[in-house]
Amino acid sequence: MSQADIDQLARWRTLGARNSEAVVRLAPGVLRAGGLGDTEWAVREQLAIAALDLGRIKLATEQINALEAKFRASPRVDLLLGLRLEATGDVERAQKVYAALLKSDGTNVSAHQRVIALSATPAETIQRLLAYLDTFYADPAGWSLLAETYANEGAYAQSLAALGHLQLLQTWDSQAVVRAGETAYTLGDYPLALKYFLRGVEMETPGAGAAEGHRGRAWWGVKLAARRLLDPKYRDGETSLPEAERSSDAQVRKLDALATEQLLALGGADLAERRAVLGEAKAAR
Image (cartoon, rainbow, N blue to C red; front, side, top):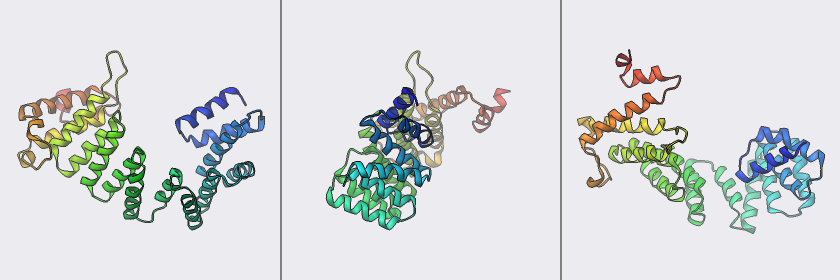
């Protein structure tokens, strides 16, 4: 054990990063060395969750037993007991544990999240998420999951609305903006999709002297939306974007060319494939 291991485990707890394999590798040595004070219990909880992630039921049980002996009738320990029941396939008993936790404290976010995760159907997931978000609006993970579930069910308009809430909560999240562009594109609202993709490009463009951003996904979106808008078959399709905010044909043509230029400038091992897809292979030769 080293202080570096203790600090690393603490850093992962602060960030909410699971890193289960690394936690299972580091935490037992840290616990054996002792001298942690009250931090021991946070490490044991962290190790229990990591062990359950990896199917290490015995290791997880050892930690849960120690926590249960220290903290009688603790909701956090009860939640771990529910997670262990899930890991061993006893979903029905796990649901009862979570129901009891919520009956005792309706604001237990972790218990709500486990109930949602155990939904039997997408429709049930959506119903539970809507009820949850009505109370816990500020949970970005909930809105992200709702958007994903709606999209998987082909309810793209509802998915786009959920992504709108996610963007309000995480104004810095460029990937949420790009997801909105992809959803609008799937809906056939190409002017709106182009607007989202351009915003994604803007958010992911590094400042002067900064490292290059990961903009490929957003630029592919610009390229695809622009090609649709230049095609007479799709140009006059329905859109929710006000006319004053739509790009002109001349602007779209420039954006189409710029997207090609930017996608080729990204380089990488798949550059030849990108040239072929973009119709630039002959020009490159």
